[in-house]
Each structure stands twice: as structure tokens, then as C-alpha cells.
Amino acid sequence: MKANNTALAEEMAGIKKFSWAKVIKRFQDRLGEFIKNRLAFLGLIIVLLVLVVASLAPWIEIHDPLQQRISSRLQTPNWEHFFGTDHLGRDVWARIVHGARIALMVGIIAVGIGIVFGVPLGAIAGYYRGRIDEVIMRFMDAFLAFPPILLALAVVAMLGSSLGNTMIAIGVVYIPRFARVARGSVLAEREKEYVEASKMVGEANLSILFRQILPNTLSPMIVQATVFIAYAILTEAALSFLGLGIQPPNPSWGSMLNEARMFIESDPYLAIVPGLAISFTVLGFNLLGDGLRDILDPRLAER
Amino acid sequence: MNILIYMLKRIVYNIPVVLLLTIFVFAMVRFLPGDPADILLSGEGGAEDPVVRAQLMKELGLDKPIPIQYGLWLWRALHGNFGKSIYSEEEVFKLILDRFPATLYLAIFAMIVAIVVALPAGIISAVKRQKPADYGAMMFALLGISLPEFWFGIMLIIFFALWLQWLPSMGYLSPFQDFFGSFKFLILPAIALGLRFAGVLTRMTRSSMLDELGQDYVRTARSKGLSEKTVIWVHTLKNALIPTVTIAGLQFGTILGGTVVIEMVFSWPGVGQLIVNAILTRDYLVVQAAVLLLAIFFLIVNLIVDFIYTILNPRIELT
Image (cartoon, rainbow over all chains, first blue to last red):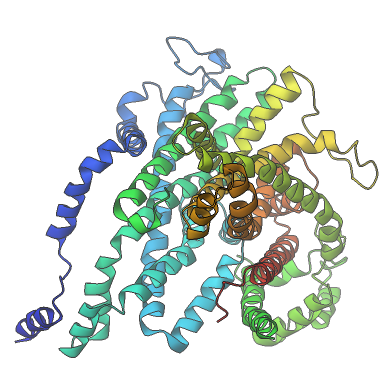
């Protein structure tokens, strides 16, 4: 009965309902564009490359990233150690490869935390408007008043430094940002006819919001998530660089840079390699994000 | 008149935000593991003695329920009393005020560096759209937002301080002592700090220039035979700059945040360095006050930028 009603309402409003098949179809249509957009394609390749390296880390790191060999410390790059060894004789290649895991894991999970908490909050604020919108967004504004890294630092100061806390601290930064994106999209979407139609046939508000409106706001969300992963990776590196993120001996690119600082006069390459790894990965996500924006969300596209 | 009401509304809107900030930083210290009294009394002398301790707790109202403690804390904070640092035993507020000028000096100069680079880059990029100059500028912008600023700072140190030995790798001189002398310490950290912002700004300038170049008035100006130079430099630029400058102002927080890391790289004696060292040494009252004051400062800057934007741009709708 209800399904009938919904179908009827759709027919009346003459609108198209969201379906995964359509999203995939739209994506396929744009896949050609994506490959034509060479920079975006390059971004995708970089991101995939880093993903592959991170997931295959145990097989391609050759040496143990934590094993210290003082006898072979501070070697310049050679066939045995592609990127040389650090001040404790650890293989830099292994640490870089292993660091990819940490960077991606923190970046993706932190952004995941931002989505899981931020999107529902923003969506509810945008859909119901009024008082609840005021309260939620005021809270979000309070969090937005902190420069991102400062908020992450405050959370780390409170919780202490560890892998999990680093993810939480960076995730907190993205909750209000996703809330904003979600609110904006829902505000625009809620005025559309299919929402009106669903209301007419008596569909519950929360069901309209989460099953009809939110799936339609997927595109800007994907674009934002990609760009925020890039920022999150940079923030993790910065926290670890300050000694407040991933703790030694774990090989975060940021903490490797921190350790390398003591040797920049004698062994500058130690500081060069982790920085290139961070830049390469972040560049990949940024290129991919730009490309996805052009493809999925033409309104926001930069010309 | 409308504008005044709008401004007033904006200020009133921000009052609850500031209150939430204070609750957040207040709660921050309460949620730490261990007895909050240990932390709060750590800067006061003689807190180990149980009698003195009990007296101090009474003085600070730590024997009262949490909401009252918050009220008392807020009252003291309003008077600039954030307690004392564990280490220097100095007033936290004074400690922060002493270091704030260095941070502000670095942040403002980094901003100037970024604007000087990014505005021309963005304009040229838009005017020479899809020509090599455009690709070059966009590549620069992309690197700007992708390179970690602290790493870029280290690279600058390796290249300019260690190899070429043109500039010192760290240190600080107050501009009030020796304005020109302070530059040689300022240049490298300011470039490192300004890089990301330059990238963001280049992109923004380009896209708002392109927006304006597509407007009707530009077509009119061109069709009445004005030279391309006049069209771009006189007519378009003025309008394109309004959103750019606004976003530039709103991005000030990012720069302010960036100082935290850059100050550690260059041993710059600012608030950022103070915060990081305070976290590392568990000097929580310093962390609490510094985080709160930076966030409030950032809010005030945003408000001012917002007002300037409102005044400059009559097209904006006041809601």
C-alpha cells in the first residue's frame, strides 16, 4: 500500500527517485570525462599506488621497519637500503612503506569519524530548521572557531597521544565541517518536489531525510571527503612531527621528519624522503578531489 | 542603519559561541586523568602542604559544585586570571601576552608574503587561461596546498641556512628593537608559513577573476572599445578582489594554526611554541588559556572581516 502510494506520488510530481543504478550510470557516463581529465586521473593513480603500497607493506618493506642496527646507521641510499638508514640503523624504505599504512589509516578513519557524526547532525539541522538548527550549528560554530590544528592539539592534550587518540582528535576537526556541508546540501534539497511528494503520502520525516534526501547529497560529500583526507593526512603528519601524534618507534612520516631534524646538517636526505612521501600522497588526494568536483558537482567546479 | 543592525546581530550571535568555547576549555582540564586540583594548584607555591592546599582550594572555590566552579573560573578569566604556569610560575595570561606579538608578527608577514605572490599569480592565471602561465600558476597552487609547511620550512633551512648560509636557521628579533634587523629571522618562517595560504589564495583569485570576466559589464566594457588592460585592471580586478580579500581574512585562522608548527621548526618564541611545549610538559593551565585566547582572537578577526566585506559589497543580502 505504502509502496504504491510512494510510486503514485512520484508519478504525480513527475520526479525521479534516487537509485544506486542511476548513480552508477551517471558515474559511467562521466568516467570518460574522468579519464580525459588527465590531472584527476593522475590523482587517482597516485592514490591507488599509495593504497597498494600500504596494503602490501609487509611484503615490500624487505627489512623490519622497527629493527635497529647501530652498525649500519646513517647510510646513504644503496642497493641494500633503497632510502638509506636512519640514526638508529633502521631501514628508511621500510619505514616509509609502513608509514603509508599509518597515514592512510589515520586519514580515512578521521574523516570517517567526521562523516559519521557530522553528516547526521548537519542533515537534521538543515531539514528541521528552527531551534534545533540554531542549537546544533551554534555548537558546530564553536568548534569551527578553533584553527584546525589547534583543536586537534587541544583534544590530544586532553586524551594523551596514541594512534587511536590521533584519529579521534583529527576526526573532531571534521565533524563541524561535514555538518556544514550536509546542512547546506539538505537545505537545497528539501525544497525539491520529491520531498514534497513523500511528505504528501505520509512518509516519516526521518525516513525522508535519511533515505531520500541524503543519498542525493552524496556527490558534494564524496568531493569533500577526498579533500579532507588530504588535510587529515597533513594534520596527522604535523601532530606526529610535534611529538604529539603517533608515538615512536612507530614509523609515521611526521615523526620520521621530527627525528630527522637533528641530522639535517650531516644527513639532509633523511628529512627529504618522508616529506616527499607526505607531499606525494596529499597531492594525489588533492588532484583526485579536484577532479571529482569537476565531474560530480559541476556547480562547484572551478573553471 | 541596516548594516549596524546586521553587525549587532553578528556580535550577539557570537556570544553563545564564545561561552561554548569557555565551557569546552574549562571541561578540557576537568576531564584530564587525575585530580583536577593537582593541576589547578600546580603553579601555586606550597600546594604540597595539606593545610595550604585546603586553603588554596577554598580560595579558588574548588570545594564547590562544578557549575559554580565554572562560574568562578569564568569570572577570573574575564579579569585575565588564568592561574599560574607550573614551570615558570608566571601568570599564564602574562606569559601568553608576552609571546603574542611574535606570533602576530609572523602571521601577518606570512600573509603579506602570500598575498604578494598569490594575487599576481591568480590574475595572470585567469587572464592567460589555459596557456602555460595558467598551468604554471595552478601547479604552484597545487603544490602550495599539498606540501606540509613544516617540511617546506625544513627544506628552506637546509637550502638557505645550511648550504647557502644566507639566512639564520632559527631565532627571533623583535621588530620594535630593530625593524630591519628582524627581517633576516622572519623571512624563512614567513615563506614556509605563507606557502599553503598562497596556494589557496591563487586558486581563489583565479576563480573569482574568471567569474567577473564572464559578467555582462565586462562584455560592455570590451564592446565599447576599452583596451583589454583597462578592462582587467580597472573594471574587473576591483570586483574580483572583494571575495578574495574576504576569504583571505577568513583564512587567517589557518595561518594562526600554522604558526604552531612553524614556530617549532624555527624556534620562534610565539604562542604556538608555548602551547606545544606546554602540552609536552603537561602545563595544562597554559594550554587551556592559550587555546581559548587564540580561538577568541580568530573569532574577532572573522567578525571584522565580515564587517568590512559587508561595507565593501552592497550586493550582499543582510539577513
